[in-house]
Image: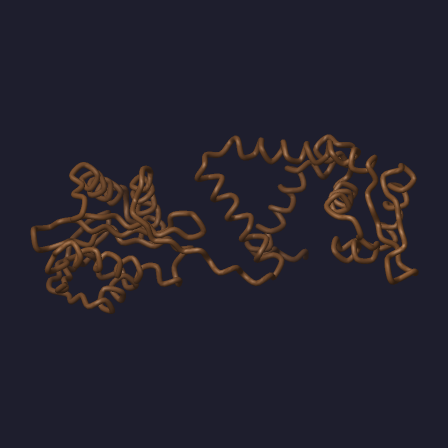
Length: 308
């Protein structure tokens, strides 16, 4: 019996099939250039810099040296490639693409650029950023290279952020807790009121960004002259473990204190264990608890507060 792929193995194989078809690698005519995938990649590397040695290029691309040698001989016969003895090593030859070689490569390079531009033209600005982030992350994971330090920024909200806050809350709470669309309606009402009645200097929305993409939020709204309310604290699943929830809550507390409030309150549910741990760590204390049926679930709501 053939082995059955795990979901992860199946996903990698499925994407490999999609990608080779998507870039036109199956027909031996990459982007309509007349080059096969391997020929095009070798030409690309030769066009980026002079001085490649054949063995070095074979190792870089994971090619059989004999197969690469045949390609290089063909490029030389076409007048696209020339070889010169390496300085300091008379036994080695360095490769250099000729002017004719660069001219042959130019249509492939332009076709590849047009293909990428066509892909991006179908996506919005946010989708483009998400795609770039996903591709870079996939390359890092698949190559085994060390992951770069993530770039984290916490900033005030700007146009478009509040829509993301509503969508992110609805999606995350549905996926993790199975809450229904009535929760999305509640978040939308809170967010709309924040925008409609916004009080500069007394209220603020903090947005956490990871590598340029929004992944977290926290709101400070006025409950009374002396009391601020912490609302809509969220960190996307992919950004959890970076301490962003704690940072967002601390930013909110610091802002409320600077704004002149004397106390901060919040409402949460007992199943939100990670959030409750943050609140406890930042000095909040539970003051009330009540069972309720909301968002399609039986829940236990809790009121918390802390002095500022």
